[in-house]
Image (cartoon, rainbow, N blue to C red; front, side, top):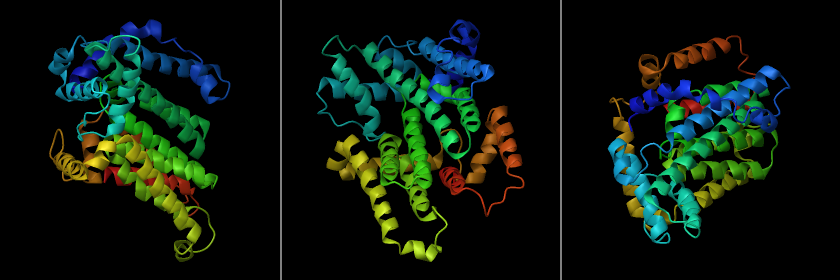
Length: 354
C-alpha cells in the first residue's frame, strides 16, 4: 500500500480511536521510571494507547488472503509468501536476498510454532508478520527513550519517543509487513549499547552493539554503515593519550575484534543461506545498491544536502520545525568539551544520510 494511502487511512480513523487512547495508561511510566508527574504519565499512556490502538485497528485490514494483500502492496505479498514458504517447507526454502533473513525467520519461527496448535492460513501469516512489525515499533519507542536517557536525560528520551510515535511514516510501517521498523529497532539497540559502552567500558556492551549492527545488516543491510561508528567509539572514548597512542593500544584493537566477531556471528546465524550462497547474496546486494542510488520517488545523487532539501520540500512541517529547533539548540555549544557519545550519534546521522 502506498504511503499516501496508508497515511490518509490512518488520519481518517484517528478520531475513532479516542476510546483506546487510555489503554495502557501509566504503562510507559512504570517501564521507564520517568519523574512522577501526572502530565507525563497521562501523555505516555495516551502515546502508547494511540500507537497500539491504531495498529490493532489497521493490521487486520486487507488480510483475507495473499491476493488481497497484492492489491495494495506487491512488496508485502512477496514478503509474506517467503515467510509462508519457510513455514511450509520446514525452513528448507531459500528466501529472497532482497531483505535479510532476520526479517523472515523471526515471524516464520513463531508461525511454525503456531502450526502445532492451529492451522496457519494466509490470513494468519499476514497478521503475524504485521504484528511482528508492530512489536518492533514498540521496541523502537522503548529504546528511543532509553537512548535519550543514557546520553542526555529522561526528559530527552521521553520527548524523542513522543516525536517518533506520532510520525505518520512510523505509524505506516507499523501496520505493514516490511523490514524498516525491525531494522530501526536493531540500529537503535546498537546505538544504545555503544553509548553504554562509552560510559561503562565493558566488552559485553561492545559485543551487544556489534550484534545489533549485525542483526540490522541481516534485516535490511543498513547495519553495515554502523560499523565505522562503533570503531570510532572504541578509539574515541576516554581522554587518556593522543589519537596516535590509541591506535597502537592492543586492548582497543581487541575491542574492534569483538565488534567484528559479534557482527559476523549475528549475521551468520540469521542469514544461513547468504553464507551458503555468497555469490547470489552479493549479486542481490549490488542490485539493491543500484535501487538506493536511483531513489524510490525521485532521482537523487545520494548526498546529505539532497536529503535535507527533500526534507524541507516534501517532509511534514513538524520535521522542518524539529530540524530548525535542533540547529538552534546547538548554539553556544562548546564542541571541545562535548560528550563523546554526542559525536557517536552525530556521526551516525551524518554517515547514514550522506
